Image (tube, rainbow, N blue to C red):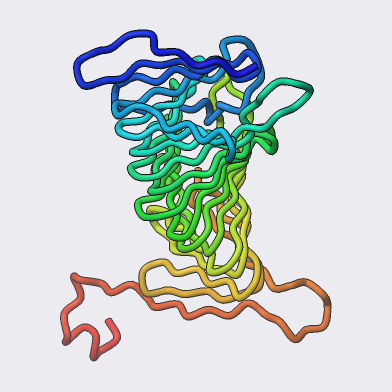
Length: 292
């Protein structure tokens, strides 16, 4: 059953409601702030999905789409999506109508009590419980981490996985990881918030610490232990010193780095390094010439 009615009017704001298979869609002007779980509009449960906007609603029955424009908001519980325009696509199922996709366009912001994601466009697939953001200024933030990307930013709700593609950067406290693609995996913390478990990097991976700069073809950062492992054409740079090898294990808590060869026993791969002696600022040129 689909029913629609005008409920009330506010200054410059149209307020309407639509019932889609038991889920309430309300349209009104609210704030320009958005929220979405750890990005969880796709969660099942009571309360339905509520959509609001300043400039009213366009309902295309034949296309089975609802379009809200002007400071539009979609929310369920504490989860919200804000954008210049929101499109809710629905379908008939067992005599009812259900929303299966939300498209947000322009100044997109998804957030919950703890997490926020931003971009120019977001496609929220409720069936798969995944949101994909594209455009400029792609960013996903938790209380302790920030994840940015150039090409796209995905969040898979059920698995609690965020994927940043294209010049991806993850900042966790004082640690910075970069790569062509970074995949951040989270555990459920107290209160249901996301807690970083690990980050997998593919392509041009590098990690910067207070003392070292480590690069490799791919890598894994274990947030629980603070240990990062990089493999493939690995280089560790500390000041003017450089070590080259196949695999590096970096303890970001202690600053200790270990570089190894591939260990296949062929003898064709070895660790190589360039070590530059530290200069003694107190030694005079005359002392240097005499060897004293």
